[in-house]
Every structure is written in C-alpha cells, then in structure tokens.
Image (cartoon, rainbow, N blue to C red):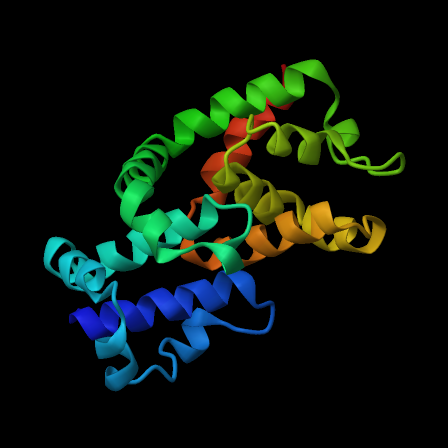
Length: 195
C-alpha cells in the first residue's frame, strides 16, 4: 500500500469500528483526497507504516489498535504512533496462541459457574460481559463465543445500556476480521463443560 492508501485504510477501519452503518469490507476506501492527505502534519506516520508493513499487515496493525481501544471514534493517530507497535505485537501473540488462550480463558470462566449462568442477563450484566470488562476475556474469545452461541442478538434485546452497546458494536465489527475454526473451538468447549 502507498502512504495514501494506508491513510485511506486507517480512515476506513476507523469508520468501521466507530460507525454502526459503515462496513469496511463493503466500502473499503473513503472519500479522502490526496490533497487532504498531503496537508496532514502526521502523514509521515502513514509513510513509515506503508514502508514497514505489507498490505495485509497494515490492515491487521490498524484493526489490532482499533479493537484494543474503548472508544474507536476518539482514538488519535498519535496514540497509534506511540503505542501501536506494542499493541500489534500483543495482538499477533493472541492470534498465534488463540487455541490455547481460548482453552485457558474458558476453563477459568466455566470453572466458576454453569454454562447457562454465564449468558444469563436476567439480573443485569451477565458474567460473560463482566469478565470481559475486567479484561479477563480477550475480544477474540468474545467473538468465538458469539459464533458458537449467538448471544449478541439476545443481549442486544435485553441489555439496553451504553456499556453493552459499546461492547456489542466492537464484537460485531471485529468478527469479520477473524477467521476461526468453529468446530475446533466447539470441541474444546465441550471437553471443558462436560468435565
């Protein structure tokens, strides 16, 4: 990707994670112009990033940074410049050890309570959400659980509060970026829950 294309990817991914109606996979590019790009004081970051990473890595780098923030709308490019590389390296480690991470975090989650209680939101925030908010569940695990249990649509109906709305949007927007073997994770989960 050229520096300008990197800038377009940045804007597209930022819109994807912060605007419920925008779909990066559908629109890919934004209406940004080369003129507006050349006026930016931070364009050196996009030049540096386009030299350092391949096309796929640039997207992963940006996604890892947007998924790690609580408010993708307000993330400033300076934050990505300062801590983006560290966040990206942590993201890569999670991707490489996703099976292990899923197993360990699921054991921890389901050793404390029954499966149905984890998703019960009759008394407010369910255990699943509370565990995620305490950073004891990775966003990838939340995506995998939704792929297996389809809990998001149910939570969306029952939890009408800004905390859940923010988490729900993040998980929905992150889901298309992850390519997971659902059958493998279902098998792992069955072994944990049946113990």
